[in-house]
Length: 149
Image (cartoon, rainbow, N blue to C red; front, side, top):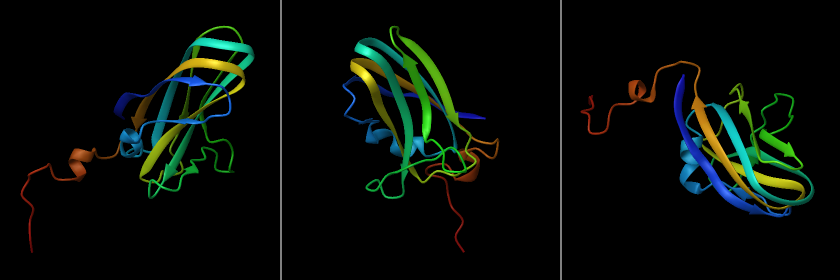
């Protein structure tokens, strides 16, 4: 069931040596639901050869120490989505099916490889769960009276 959808990254990236990360404003929001789909759009590319842009999930229990959120049970790629093209703007999507739980804080790591000198990257996120109770059904609404015993 779709729980949330939003633009989580909208930046111009430069070169291949720098990893860019989503804003800390989204750390908690990205960690709320275990299933994550990412739609990556790359445009306005300046390059001198092949271009690859990877979007990866990282998660943390304390927002200080971050580790890759592996999608593959056997320790495979943490890549959420990858865009590969040498000449044109384009879009790709990928996802994390949630079979391994996330830590409470999640961020995106965006990095170009190849010969890109500049590109505009946007990552749209859809968060889903396996159809369990919604957050409103699990926690009392803000300001609701609580039973004491």
